[in-house]
Length: 462
Ligand SMILES: [Zn+2]
Image (cartoon, rainbow, N blue to C red; front, side):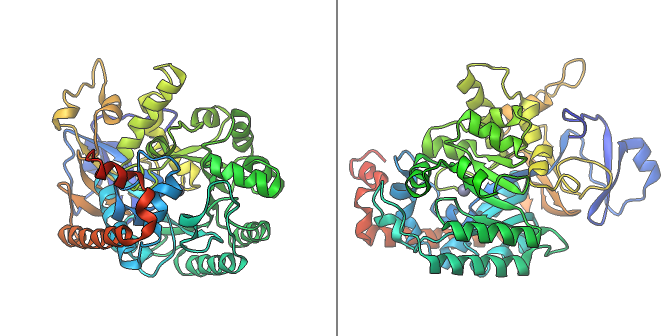
């Protein structure tokens, strides 16, 4: 992924010492130059930098498949479950999601969640690279399920203040942890979910602590409605006014941003996360990433949450991103394979401000590497000369299950398609039990009655 394309090299080798890449070059030259403790034969494989998922909500994997095909996804799809997502369930979901993503080649995970005890420890234990954002909002827990469409949210200054304190404590504990493998951003959930004073307070904290701000921006007509009612302004103009539009902002979604607003945000230096699968399922919208990129903005890919995507797999996001935008513009040349592969690697790293360390295979960078088995039936045949088909097949034909080795920080975490140091069966058993607990609690809760999924079930359609 060096240069302006994919930086294709054939019959090349990579030397890794401790956590970093120490050389890249022709295999014969590296074999002559280095004495390795272990040599991994990558014949018939594509060696890629680890994939980057810039926006996830891993705890929600505990209720994968319960919130889709529904209007007003947040209120009608997710909120009934939010009321019953107890700590053990959230942790079980995070474990499942982290392993799912890791096995599909994601080495950097930009997770966004309430900072419950034990959450960050999962990323530390699994050994992946993580950019963790503790959700900050001023919404009383459980209130959203009873909130009526069109009403202003019942924001609480006290809850907002507690939420900010929790995020500050979390950052103090985790930013730079695990030899720098874990870093932290500040996460005001949305401009509509905190008071103006609290938004300004977080911006000052971020500047003092040198942390980026990771925020949902113009993420739905619901948000725009709240902003117009509260401030008389749409989100982009409001963020401009309060000093949020700069290169320290990682803006997620931009679902409702117009092309002019999108261009304004890109010109400010802010970065964007595009969640094609999630926003497709939740809103039926293709976010304006093509406009953002053509204005010079950096765009990372994100998988968002499994309750409304419904998987966390960057191979899936690459394909959906290419397809949705071709369809949107009725133009098959939009976002070719090599561009979305760059969004999943080097451009994602740039968007997160981490391109000095990850996103491409270059001497001096962190050894975050994946091997994709090109003998998989769906990736055959492999052509290199005089025609080369590898990158289009990685984007349009791969599913992520072809990843058979994953290395993060120079440490092998997945070998022969298996996570080698974690008991996957224990993770499966725990998430199954916790999901059933949550489902039972939701079913007992009178709020479930207007859930679309239950109606479809009762009608015998699901
Ligand atoms: Zn999100």
